Image (cartoon, rainbow, N blue to C red):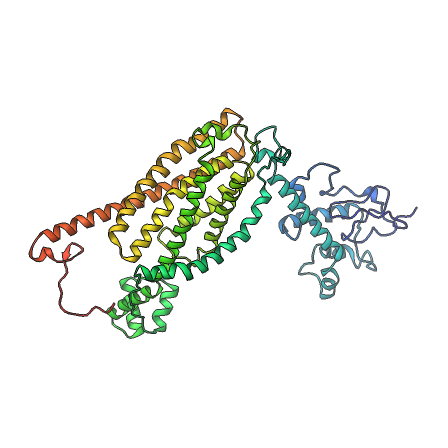
Length: 510
């Protein structure tokens, strides 16, 4: 039978070469060999032949995905050109003679099969720019690549101990086990939390602020100045002395007026006292309710008193509805905090807050679908035990109740240090690091979970340093105030930077 007369169609797909004895033409990879040329049996095998069975290696899969990996596509194009030249010049355009078309026509045809190049004419690019077969093959390769990555991500050896599979955690005999698909509900619940927060701040926190006499100080606005505004938005909010002098010449103002303008402009961008109060009251309400609910969930469980029972029967540990809702609500709340972090009050530990929220979301999610539920409930309740104290101290601080704020802050500092620097590392981390190794060898999930716990512990040490420094400033400030009040003359006046403030009856406008 002549070559090309009745070629057997090749199977579809980017990585499927033609069968031996047939035409050997693959969809989207060029024309068939010219009449009189060698048959497909003389074509060497291409480098991306599809495997018959088993998972496809990622390296073999990536070389087929030209739209996503251009470097690998170039390598595949080069290999295809060598294969065609070795097969006797297949792939040249019809009507091109051996002397006129030659190597140039062959190279153009090869380039046209992989998206064209700068050497192609406008007509060739138009003819080779849209090929439904190529697009379908590329989409199929991309889908297969994603499926392969999905299979590798959910490989049992990553998340479960040895000799255990996800089939062991399927619901049976009325026992319900944690599944990763349960976490899908947390994203819409996070949006529900944002809506609830909006109405809470509007109808609960705002009247409460008025009841506690939270008043906003009047702030003078900076006068419009395009030169200074451009520098403020592009270069910085606190110019150096050299920059102040330069801006003074450019704007026609004195150096003191430039400094006053930047001070007022910074005050404009500071969040209002009411905004801070409403945010603190929302977090206080949630953390208090979450702590009470968390203690109700775990206080009657045997692993609350004996840490070894956390791993009793792991990972074949069923869950109950109270644990499910405790997890979903906590995870949804932290998702809502991450979504609103750009619009919330930006504090000094802004970056650390982002790291904390991300690490918390990862830990809660992983502990759920890897069935670390018992350890997870203990960790969440431990964190909620001190957070509501901090938020209540902020509320009284914004309301001007300084003594109440200081007393609550002292209680918060003691609870924080005991729970985060004593109980968490010496009880909880010991439970997750040591006890599991008595039951099964370490695996990736074991290392991953404890690594994220280590990240949280480092953040706790950083925040404990900030808390102790703040407490030291408060104690030193109060002692200085008492000494000044006990003295006479100039010492009885208010202090600023260690010196008495002299009243010269000048009005301070900024």
